[in-house]
Length: 233
Image 1 (cartoon, one colour):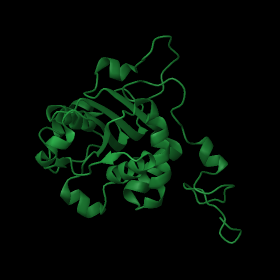
Image 2 (cartoon, rainbow, N blue to C red):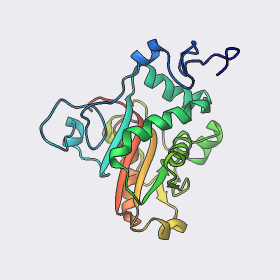
Image 3 (cartoon, rainbow, N blue to C red):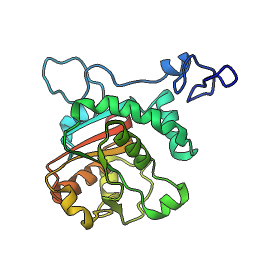
């Protein structure tokens, strides 16, 4: 960036020393999931001599997918970035967020992978104008030249907004709401899937998507999200 147009922090707009990054204050308020993490959801876990290791939530209720990763905790600036992308049309954030996600999930990337975003119902898509999971998946797929299928899964029921719901209510809310696009059966069979979403709370949506992909013939299903809500239900 030139002196006429100094680099700006993605989160707060303050001047930074490099383009497409965060200022020092926002960087300190972003809780990256580094070190030892749960092999199912990517949340940080206490040091363990056992590999792979799992968080208490995934031990108590194992998810429907094989392995998962996240980039940040859904707190501080990480939460702010996720909300800016979803609700404030900040599509300029997606490339950098996708880079962080790609870095986080490198240990679980399979050679024959196909990126599949978590779907939005058409009415919510019309209101929001874009599917943030699909945008992130597209940027991630470009990084390593992987295949992507944005319409492999369809959400056929307009479910209630899940914010504030517990784990059981979330699973019930998603019952029979997501289906597989049968025109992609041959494209998926025997392949490895990487499900992509922006935020994970209980994992109900990702589990529903993983089960559908398995039923359609996927050999392995992994997941990656930008932010993980680190809490127990």
